[in-house]
Structures are given as C-alpha cells and as structure tokens.
Length: 201
Figure 1: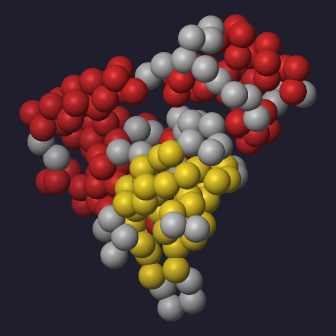
Figure 2 (figure 1 turned 120 degrees about the vertical axis):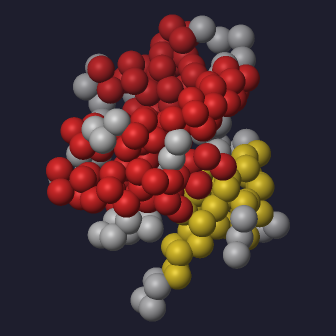
Figure 3 (figure 1 turned 45 degrees about the vertical axis):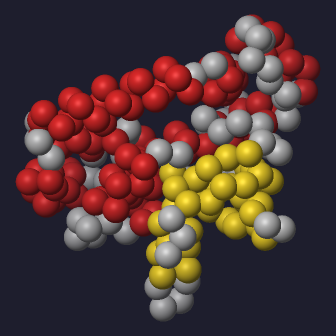
C-alpha cells in the first residue's frame, strides 16, 4: 500500500497529476477541487494516496489532506459508488459539507455531485449516517479551516485566478492550464496574476 507520495509535481492534467518520486512518475487521480489548489509545476508536493486494484486496472487516487482521503475511503464503502464516483463527489462537495449533509439528511446537496441522483444520495446518507457525530463534524471543520488559513496565500490566489478566467468564458480545464503556466509569487496581488494569465492567452 502506498500511503503518500512526496515529490515534484511534474504534470497537471484535467483530472490527474504526475508526481515524480525518485525518477519515477506516478499518475494520480485527484478531485477537481484539489487540482485547483496545487502549486505550480516543478514544486514539491505531498499527496495522500489510495491504491485501487481491480482485475483489469490499477488506479492511484490522491488527496491533499488526510481528511479527504478518509472521506474517500468511506464513500467507496457505499454500495454503487466506485472510486471515480467518490472522486466526483469530492470534486463538487467538500468533506466537511458531506459530513453535515449526511447528518442533516440533505439529499439535495449530495445529489448536486455529478452522476449522483436522489436515490444514490439517499443510499449514501443511510449507509454513512452512523459513521458521523455532530460534535466531531464541527471539530473537523475547525481543523480544516485552520489548515486552509495557514496554507492560503499562493493556493488561494491560484484558485481566484482560475475562477476569474472561468467567469471570462474559459472552461475550468483551460483556466487551469493558463494559470499553471504563470510563475506566481507570494507577494503578487490577484489582479497581477490575472493580468499575467491574460497575457499568456
């Protein structure tokens, strides 16, 4: 089992990245929300991983936080939700929001994820509601917010730039490609980053 990968971010694609560790490139599928938070190519990253083995395929799924990884492991225990489906849910809804949606039995929120209808959302809530407690859900949300604040800066600005480009009419994947070509520094403003992105177009 590969617990995590720590190495250079060699490539960033629409739904996966290549992490180079000891001259070996590992293809790792990531939620779309995590891909938006990645540093620029060539940076060092740590990705928590889950190795999924099937008769006809082996897939490595990665997450920027242990909390996302644990949520992914829970989601794939739900009957009818595979690794790709779980990744799609985590791309659309944060682990925190999934916990609160399950506790509140909010099928509408979970059904917003791609490929998840009301029936699957209901099944997910039924199978996971005993796994969460309101107390621990609030504690985990607080921990995640603290981590986001300490890790904001470049990641936050990258995300803003991607969102700004999608507002201007670019698809999420096009916006991501443009932002990945820009060398973003800590002291840059969001406006400066966006200007540099538009020059690349």
